[in-house]
Amino acid sequence: MEEWQQLLVDGINRASQLPDEWLSTKEGVGQDSVEETFPIRINSYYRSLITDPKGPIGRQVIPEPEEILDFDSPVDPLGEDEDSPVPAIVHRYPDRVLFLVTNQCPIYCRYCTRKRMIGTPEGVVTRKEVDEGIAYLREHTEVRDVVLSGGDPLMLKDDYLEYILSELRSIGHLEILRIGTRVPSSLPQRVTPELCGMLKKYHPLFMNLHFNHPDEITPEASLACNRLADAGIPLGCQTVLMKGVNDETEILKRLFQKLLTIRVKPYYLYQADLTRGANHFRTPVSTGLRIIRELQGFTSGMAIPHFVIDAPGGGGKIPVLPQDYLVSMEDGDVVLRNYNGKVYTYPEVPSTEEVSEGTMDGNDGSRVGSIGASKGKKRTEL
Ligand SMILES: *Cc1c(COP(=O)(O)O)cnc(C)c1O
Ligand code: SF4
Image (cartoon, rainbow, N blue to C red; front, side, top):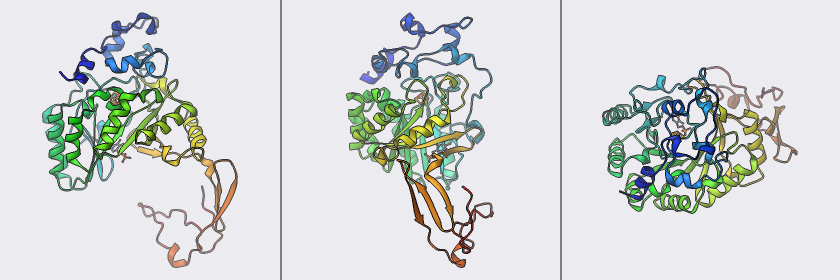
């Protein structure tokens, strides 16, 4: 057995394996019912990072009675099941898809948007479903970007993952492949030289990792990221903003800066989804906006992810920016506010009739505000 497999075997999968004082109780909620609904997995590496059960690492993986006290929130908040032409594929955007190749993860995050399927017997992704997914992608020539996700694709054994990657690479219209993974932050021992040697055969291959707190950037995690980067894989990070875990500017600044030192570029900061069993992690949207405002300009632009809300019901990811940067666009002047509050004016390109006509139409044929239009007096609503 490889080291990473041993760490999973030795890990925790029942609450009763945790110290009693780590578990919160609530009258009328048995621990068994929590773990029967939402499985527990804390591999022994990640377990070793927990110093305080209510700290930022502990909260991400230790079950809470609250998880089963919410009956009203959606189990599939992003409407993924509706955009699923075959079981393993979510095809929402014109040119790219999610390919859910497994429902196993190195840890089972309590805040997970896909709690409905992660680690459950019903959620298992079969070989047949993977092959149907590959067949779907072969037919759909409009797809040029496939995001392998799950679950965590790096939970698959090297040869099965290689089978999937090589099948996808045999499809000419697939330009790029991506893997979304929690492994480097929660089971870095899985990133073996053999795995990296295999992955580098399937370039252009990108990876989006999932770090939420600077304490996850350990020497082991750094080694894993450096190995992946040395295999030529561009690394991004998708972070979920969570109450009591990372909802402070200083924590996220440290996380994003440290990620750059291990060659990982922060990609997305997600507003937590409205997911049954995970809502105790949600923060007000204004918190995320304030954090972005407190980072932008104060540290490397490279360290700043896009803050996005994945719209309930299948709207997809929508970037949100603090409102105050663009003050107005009027009379040919773009008035801007910088990171420390000073106001500047950028003169808009004076547009001629020919340029302004017909160039700004939205997809639906409607007129999108014609910026600095020929009359020079038009106001664009912000
Ligand atoms: C996030 C996501 C993608 C990838 O989106 P990018 O913004 O290109 O990273 C694709 N499909 C679905 C359904 C997604 O949720
Ligand atoms: S690793 Fe990702 S998919 Fe798996 S439980 Fe955590 S958030 Fe969900």
